[in-house]
Length: 149
Image 1 (cartoon, rainbow, N blue to C red):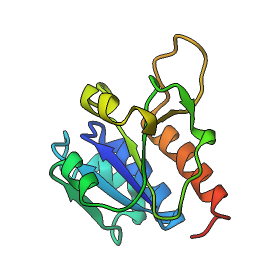
Image 2: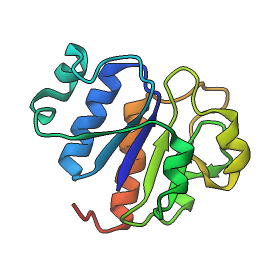
Image 3: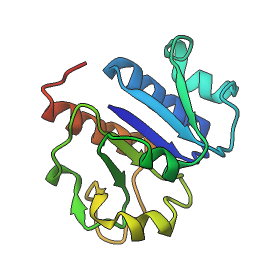
């Protein structure tokens, strides 16, 4: 499995996701541009000692990346209609999350609307924290695959 963060903005969120990916043997990719350096002090502080041996893939263009991949993928958005538990996740799937302030571009919503899922929350709430949402989604996908690490 792989978590893909589209243009992440907050290094602490990415650091927390690094920790989650590290302990679950999950790959992580960041779509450029992102608003911090991979060597950022706050990113490393959040990732603690998990950061030193963890490899982060960098993606220049998400659309091209998805077109060149055979892995199934799902976008997570508070604007989606389908609940994240209504999907059957494979061991090679991509879980894609938008940036903290602007989410995912409308282009992806329009082209891949059937691939959008949400983590439910109360009505009129903006959204959950990115690292929390990624952890919830990842653990559901791992649960469905018998926690294969």
